[in-house]
Image 1 (cartoon, rainbow, N blue to C red):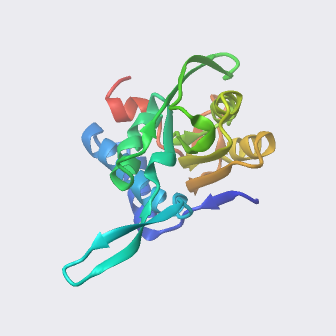
Image 2 (cartoon, one colour):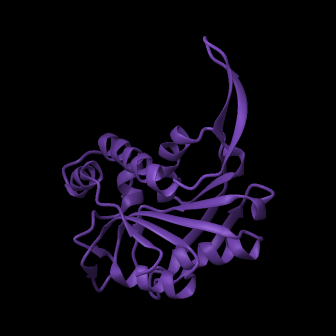
Length: 209
């Protein structure tokens, strides 16, 4: 599927296997989420714009490229998406961070917005939306809807685990959004959880039940 990139790097796959293990504790789980986000970010940010600056080396002065990091916005979907932010900021410390808060109706599984704060000017930035799990796709579609309503144009979505149903829904609603996925799982179950998945990412990141 166009604009859907599954990242099959051995280190990403190894760390996802550790995430899946129900015996992986909160501290390790949180670290793994950050590490995977950093590894995924290396690929997802491969087209960041550069500009040349003058640098004096021990030998001579030269023009050399640097990233225009101020043009990057990382926007986690609360709360699980927060777990991926530090991994991306480790790559681009100058990036701005926005937040989108959604809650899911327990019966319909549809998302509802309760918070949206984006760095300005959002229309001039490359926006990377983060959420470890892309399940039904409802939250992802809603988040991208909100960003576009606020003027966001160039949007990428990063998810560590995704279900085919969520990928299809996001791609159909926003075919212009590049989706970076660590692993595409089998399916959703009757409770809209990804199978085999890794449980509730938010609960496992923050140690809540």
